[in-house]
Length: 194
Image 1: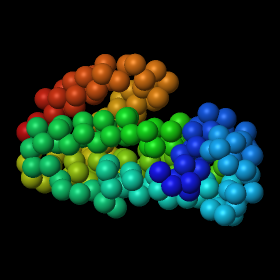
Image 2 (image 1 turned 120 degrees about the vertical axis):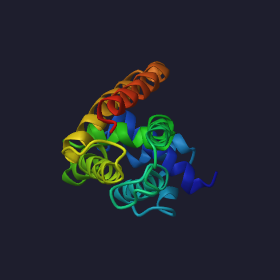
Image 3 (image 1 turned 30 degrees about the horizontal axis):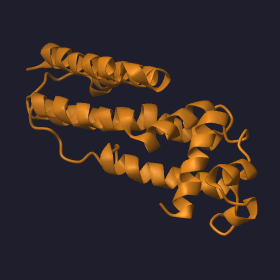
């Protein structure tokens, strides 16, 4: 791992633990094992580190989970939908970078308008738009009954978000959460299957 990567990883860990304002450049340097002035060889300052972390996390999330702008392949069957959705949830729940970034954003969203916007996009608006588009496609294909796609997207994502937040606080319940989420998805399609 390069020094720059170690700085980013350490900073994210400290931001998730202590918050952005509760983390100093000196603390980051100390935990990396370098002198504070050496940080400035890699980053202009703490905000530059934060911006780099956001860019890395956004790209990683987009590539592995998707978004309303990058849905990827729409599942053809209910089984494929459940499989792909559980895979995405497992990624977001267990990926160390995404998990730490989510914990950090949840804490910092009340102190920064920009971080509040990012949190809302990933945990509410973008997620709802992504699943709304997927469900509209499944409705048009005759896989599920026609209904309000926004309400159905909310119905699918809200319980999942609750369980992910529980796993963030209590990582040992990950298996329980994944089992519940899969059961929830099966129940959803049992209810709305055409």
